[in-house]
Image 1 (cartoon, rainbow, N blue to C red):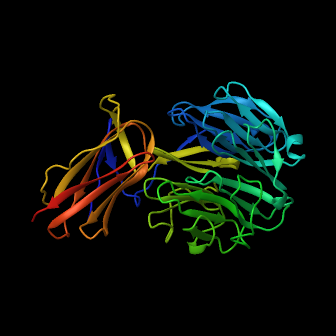
Image 2 (image 1 turned 60 degrees about the vertical axis):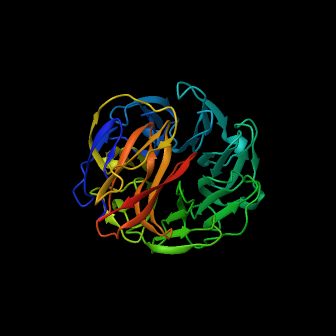
Length: 413
């Protein structure tokens, strides 16, 4: 069995996912419909449901305390997104799109009339000023930060909801369509920055949640349509296959530390097998948004259990050691080398990025995945155990959003 131990500015104690998770509840009694992590460290935003919960809240300490930064007029804050300049956008169902250029201190209202009086439900930002808004009856795009808007003629009348901009090609935009008040439920793909969309590529399923994995770019889709398929696409959404059936109707999806988290009727569920199987994550209240922001998993609920809830995954007991921030990416030679059976791999990253570390044998076959998650700036080490492997030459590779490198190590028994 291969073991992984992480250290970087903190000491971590690993937990087993079969152990009961302890959830913290904040914003108690509030109905929360959306969650987003800000570009700034430790800052999280939450959007509320209708009525007195039509608000935007901000936490600057990873969710432990919250402040109301915007009070709406009774309608849902459906979705929250940030552009490359850290401008904040909030899809407010009846009022339009809210935009803040100062971290939520004040908001400009882009009225619903800019969207042909169609109600915003989703928002996502691309590169170079592109902003996308999904509505209850269509899809809109702006190429200048929300100053002007145009509607996609191919999705008029569709109840559009989640939006994903492809991580590799900013001209590719994905949209899920649901059934309430609209047509053509499923998944749609644009290759021209949302101006036009092709045919429905995953029909017959309410496209309530879509996620793209940060490393390999695979797409996953959850649905509220029975039997609640958990679907995967390995070719930019052109074709789909069903990995498994989720436990119930699902509305939120997140990826963190080599695991999927989904939320919906019945609570929050986890899979560490790329969606092949699911188990309840010790949370049974019906949930809507699910979010991973190191080192916590977050969900939002409404009703009697309403609020923001969060729990560790899979790291707890974080203790600061120092405040060293490296100036560059670096992958160091493992030590000891040769090794038997354990060795340590150290690496440095100067800023927040997705990190993957894979071990390969001399033929190029993967033998261990040591790490796949988003990490902040720091110096880390990962322990690799070669028990059960044959003596020989192995290679370990680090991949981040901006850096990759391979080094050789020798297992000598």
